[in-house]
Image 1: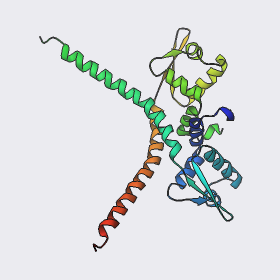
Image 2: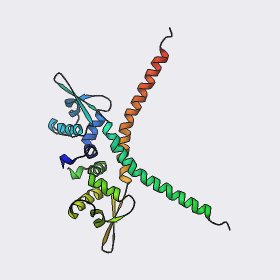
Image 3: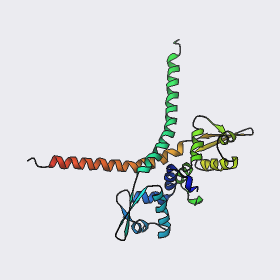
Image 4: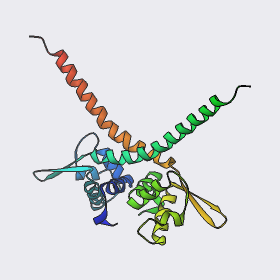
Length: 115
Length: 115
């Protein structure tokens, strides 16, 4: 991984490219949680969960708040907006192309001389 | 990377998590191209480009057609649908929560006893 050159979009997609990280994001949808609470249901060590959390934090998808001795994590969906936009613009192109083809065919039918 | 356990969604996001791979997908939006044509404008070796193409193919985002000695690649946007859905369902939750909060506040204002 070329850390220095990673664009925000790279970090977002990289963060999403793992089922554990997607599960952590889903876990934090409804409420904040402590690292130990997030780790409890996951079939891996606390150290492994911490690494996944670090990937999500680097992508800006998690916020960490320290209160006393506890670290509370909450989700920040903001970086997902650009990630969604890239895909929708890309797939939208196909839809527009399909629409344009339909228009073209319709026009051809209309322009056909009546017998 | 845990190759054997990689879900389709993992492969899609992993494929998108690199600017060269996103550039290749954009390049193939309008028309198919040969590997050498795809590699020509990119500032890296043909071998490096081939590796990126392999990642995109593994994610099902490219189709390869062999005619004579030439390999032609074209884009397949289909796997992007699920990748877009995951994000939009996730971000949509926040929008719905904001709407629910607005409704709740509105109801509170309506239920306030008139002086």
